[in-house]
Image 1: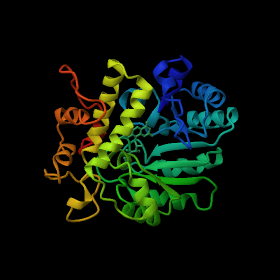
Image 2: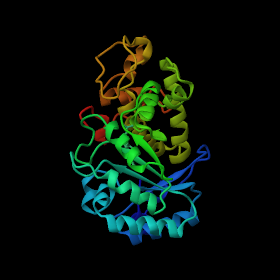
Image 3: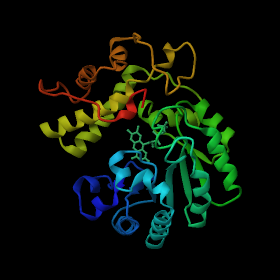
Image 4: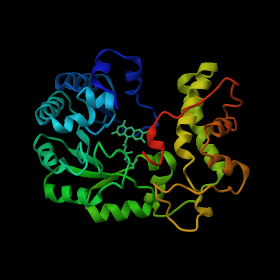
Length: 320
Ligand SMILES: Cc1cc2nc3c(=O)[nH]c(=O)nc-3n(C[C@H](O)[C@H](O)[C@H](O)COP(=O)(O)O)c2cc1C
């Protein structure tokens, strides 16, 4: 998610988000902001200066700093600004516009079903509905009953609707898709915890990925990190930090060869278990100090003694 004002200010970190990697065969840029004019101007620049296939407007981000600035999920409560931003983006760009939203701002006060038909009127091509309100964060399960209500509300309108929330197995993907009638499902944490989930969905089967193969996936990540940040001390440490960040999600995976009942659910806290080898056990550790140890098994090698890590994203916690 890139913030419109930061893009217009030429903020280096924000512009880094707009860079497309050669391996990305489809690439969208997600924008947010509190001012429709700034959002429109940022979209125009993105359309001209980046290789983008679609622009996604974020009106679901729950973070206080965004919400208080009238951006992210605050936009769900500001229909006029929302219309101006959507029509503005559509006017200045020639790529499809999509929207990412939540059920509403407050729990028990769903408003998405009222907004979605308007989005269709205003030229949005696809919306993705995360089945929780801002207030809920990650507590309670995503509400696929409500997502189904929204599908029904849209009837045979042109705009596609995707659902989002809690999908962690190919079985759940097809169950929830069929149940709610959505055109597709977006996957967030499931892809972070189990990056091969898309292959499992496509092939409708579970894969018992071994620890050595998981280490290979981490090494691939390190290779891209070093390519991007450089192989000097700063580059290696930055890559290590991002790898620890990712491990804060990856450690939640339970190898299916060790499970008594399939599939694993995203909100189930795994019992403490021993893996089939030392590496698999280390990969399951919830301790940040072990995440650093694990980075030392990758091509990054030993960490400096001064290296510490504190997870920054609350979404990796079971409580949300
Ligand atoms: C680390 C992390 C970063 C996220 N960043 C974004 C973001 O930039 N934009 C966005 O629309 N949603 C973001 N989300 C929310 C997810 O897209 C998704 O809506 C949410 O996690 C629920 O889906 P899931 O249960 O499949 O994870 C993020 C989630 C996580 C865990």
